[in-house]
Length: 173
Image (cartoon, rainbow, N blue to C red; front, side, top):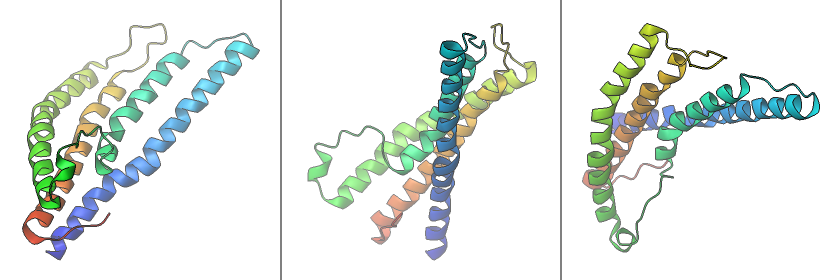
């Protein structure tokens, strides 16, 4: 039982540390590139061709890498009007069923597809059809990575919920 609890905490820490550190720094990178563009465009009068693409790629990276982090804190939109009135154990059972069927099936279908998608982009060295001609395959690799991180967090939540349902043990984060 202690090994399972330790393993669950380890899984939680993967997304938590990645979100606390890496995803937060990506946002600072976005702000830095935006500031650079504003200064060069407005004050120097020399807009840069690459800034819009870099901002878009950084925002995409921020968004997809934050999926597991957001699920860790359960900050996705939840309509729990009826379930909040139910006993805690029933709430956890319904959450487990919902997460397993909706997120689990989504991940089961999308992860292999995303891996093939990014693998094909990497193999062809896919680049943007813009004058900056930036490599897109680097960004497309983040899609399966984010889905794997979301899978890790789903497994952690399902394990925590299972420990609560069957053992009465609530794992604190």
